[in-house]
Each structure stands twice: as C-alpha cells, then as structure tokens.
Image (tube, rainbow, N blue to C red; front, side, top):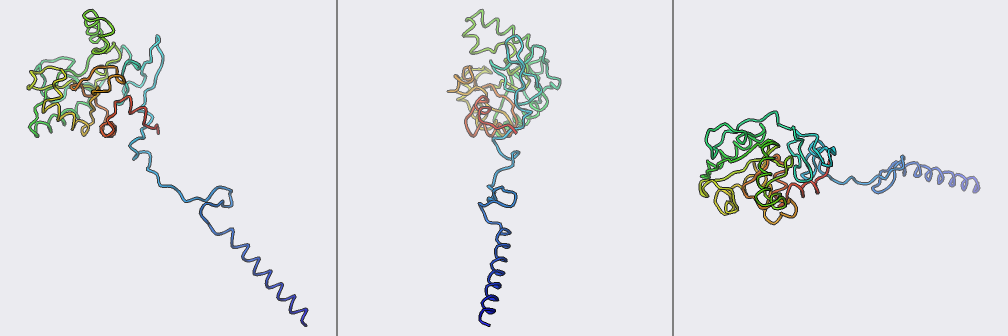
Amino acid sequence: MRLKFMLLFIMIALLVSGCNQIDLPLKKLPFTSDDSGEENQQPQEELPPENDPLSLESIFFNEIKEVDGKNVIQNTTNTMALVNNQYFLPESYVPEDLVRPNVAFTFGDEEAEKSLMRQEAADALTKMFTEAKNAGIELFAVSGYRSYNRQEILFEAETNRVGRDKAMQVVAIPGSSEHQSGLAMDITSRSINFNLDESYANTKEGKWLAENAHRFGFILRYPKGKEAITNYIYEPWHFRYVGVKAANVIYEHNWTLEEYFNEVKKM
C-alpha cells in the first residue's frame, strides 16, 4: 500500500513538472530568443526615414557620369543638385520650367535671362519677397538664371583681368555655376546702392535674409568662414533654393550644402 502511494506521488510530480516545461517556451521574455531563433528584444523607437531631418530620398543626390575628365550631373532637374567646382552641369542644360518671379529687379521690367528662375524656386522667392515687404524690408533681385555661354564670357573676362586662380574664387567655371541651375538668385537693396558686396551683411535687409531665408527654402550658399569648403569668397547676397526641409537643417547646423551632403543619409 505504501509502495502504491509512493508511485502515485511520483507520477503526479512528473506530470506537474512536465506541464511547466510545456508552458515556459510560450512565455515571451525580453532579450531572449523565440522559436525562430531570433532575439526577442524590445524594439527601439526610431523616427520614420521621411521624418528624420538627416534622411533624404535618393533622387536628391547627384547622379554623376565622367565626361572629359569632369563629374557631370545627369539628374539635372534635381532641385537639390550639388553644383560646385567638382560637380558640373552639362554644357547644354537649360531648365525647361524657367519663369520670372513676381519680385522687384534692379533693372526694372527689362526682359533678360537673369530675371528667370525655375518655377518652384521662383514661387518661393516671390513668397519670401512678399513677407519681407510686409516686415518693412525692401529687397531687389539682381541675377537668377545664367546660361553656360554667358558664364563662359564672364569667367574669361575675369580671368583676363586678374588671372585664372583669382577668377575662380569669385566667378564659377562654366558648368559649375548655380545660376545655370535656375535655383539661385543674387539679392541686394537700395541701402547699398544695389551693389553686391560684403557690406550687405550689415544692412537690415541682409540680416533679415540671413535669419529668414531658410523658412522659404533658401540658404546662404557661400557663408563667411566656410571659404575652404565652398571654394568661393563670402557672398552674403547669393541665395540658393534647396527646399524648406533641407534649408532648415542647414540653417540650424550652420552648414554649407557640401557639409549637408556629408551628413545626410540616403533613403
């Protein structure tokens, strides 16, 4: 009788123990592996790529092809194209959506290619000039789109005047000018007699632009202290359209467009 009781007790104990072994693998514990062998860790919260300020769609990066020893941009309609003395626009490139922004120009109503910008940039410039006017800031546009041939004439003239090395610091080599992209505009004011020089940075108009242009998608393209990166002198009058998202990031970090592309992640 005692032996039967002991055997019954052992069988009950084994049954209870077996049930526990069946239950344990079903419990999902953090930092352990599940049945598939993958770690069952608590997921870390990450911003969706489209909401990450340092993520950028691949279409906004330069697509390059080497032509005659130059890195020539193939996706020319890219509004964020990095155009400089390393990345060139094709000689034949003329934006198809050039329009005249509804802003005041230093040359009045004269019809000229320099009064044109690409549609998206022109709309943003018009909005920026309008808000500036409402804030008591009077701005004047000087020079927007510039063809390859026109850039060639300007560069040759400056080279003949001061030599090629010095010319490259103030006038872009043909094909490397942002003006050819139709996304840049030189801006001035009456307070400095409509000139383009460093004194513009000290005017109320120049200060307003430096502090507000990013809200409309523009960046101060050649800032002071970044000459070694941009390879151009400080130009407080030259503003480039890149879109509001990128412009805000560049403004907040005090970056150049070159520095921005060194930091941003492709998605």
